[in-house]
Length: 396
Image (cartoon, rainbow, N blue to C red):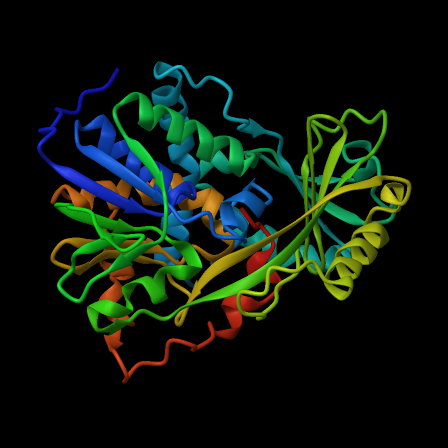
């Protein structure tokens, strides 16, 4: 049951970006009665369309409490969001609790993550039970029989495209308009779409890795860079993969199953700019390391490859907050867009309405890293922890 009070349709918000953050912001604004226009730039390499969809916040962000809190609340927000979407006729959004196998070659390698999980469990019982597994291949049949494993039964997986599309369809039912075109901000905070002015009381910039370029006319350098991920989808004929747990190794590729005998293997972590190609080296790395971990996938048919640009910031933290009087930025979720994206969209919507968001967004203020145009370092790469394989292990 919705308890929010609608605002006036005289209020117009424009959301730049149709990925999961932008779709969520548009949906939550539309629920409040705001007239919303989503500008879809149809950019090649949108992270939402490529993301694996792993929802497992408890294994990452050690020592980064603000990031962990955002990811944790993002995972928890799926339950009320599914109720909201269900009330709007969107009943199939692909979310499924399947659990996860944390695997390593040596059982000793699992000790640090087990310690981390146990330290967090009292405050996060939704992670589920932590238990050793003697025969992990019983749960994920293609796995090598000799890997060490812990099972965590709280993790879920989603199809980012399905969630995004459900949010956009529901937003449209509430009056949102989706237009295709290239958005550009003006130095005064105005907005152009394909060169023509578009009036807006507030603009939410949820343009992922393209956010820095969009915000530059405001006279600020917002350091967001793309980090390329190449991901492979394979079909293992005859296998009932829908209920398989997510496989999260301490090093190397993650694996997860989807309905239709589909298995996802990914992903590379590459600083390659906006180069959206699938490369022989990148795809070869994903397939070789994936099959080494799960030899039973050697006979699977390669059915699809995807490339996405994770939006990564200079200090590794997301950017969520007011950049200018009428401009809210929501980006920089890196490999956790599908975990925290819907919740980040809710936060952005509340900020756009001038309301207090459900989570303190102060630590994510874009002004902590933004600098006047010409003095900043927009190409600055993220710190080592944000680009490490372990930081990407629960990619979603």
